[in-house]
Image (tube, rainbow, N blue to C red):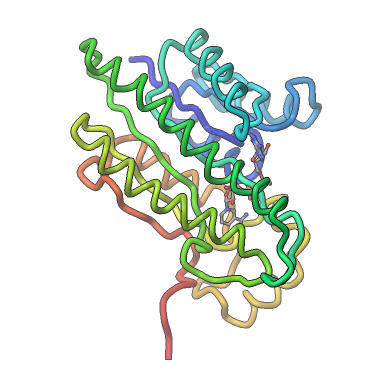
Length: 259
Ligand code: NAI
């Protein structure tokens, strides 16, 4: 069976952790990211993921906030792989500037929303249309969608309000797509990572080192990309297929309320 996963932001950070876990489970991988295909780090990363894989791994340069770029991405991926069985909406950015809510600019808000919410939402729409068409044509493959949101879907951080808003939007997108795609037996899941060691958190590493040591997370360590990758692999295998719309926190128990 042809099992292809499209992982946005799949050559770095959490996306790469997901790619590695799926590569080891026999998936073909279409990875996309904002860097060009010629980028040295991208090429190294793709080669390393390929070394774990039994199936092809390809990288596509694509700005997911652009309608045209998303259309080209899907044309290329479907040409190369024939289908997308699993879409993982992982690519995302942090706030351009950590500024107080009272100072947030509309320009920075728009920029982030287009990447973190609008892009993944319409990518899901486009992939879902193709999944439904394949189902209607008699394809019996198991299709699924996974959204990578954040604990920021529910936790308010006033220095990066646009990020929180975008992730709350992603969480609603999970519920909307789970509802719309259920009749086609296409489950939609969500993972909410906590504090994960990647390039995105490098700038705030010292702050989180201290907070983790002080007990911010119940499990006193940073999360790593493979923590998320293993959960996506479980979803990709179909282990929780009767649980569409479910959210799994991968945050070391950070959001458990304590006295
Ligand atoms: P990262 O900065 O290491 O990687 C982000 C990836 O997204 C890169 O591959 C990049 O090329 C891609 N990307 C960014 N803008 C893009 C665009 N316009 N078009 C296409 N690709 C684009 O970040 P990290 O930490 O791996 O984050 C991955 C996801 O996990 C993001 O959605 C982030 O919000 C989320 N997350 C991360 C947490 C963390 O602590 N690192 C915590 C909670 C959620």
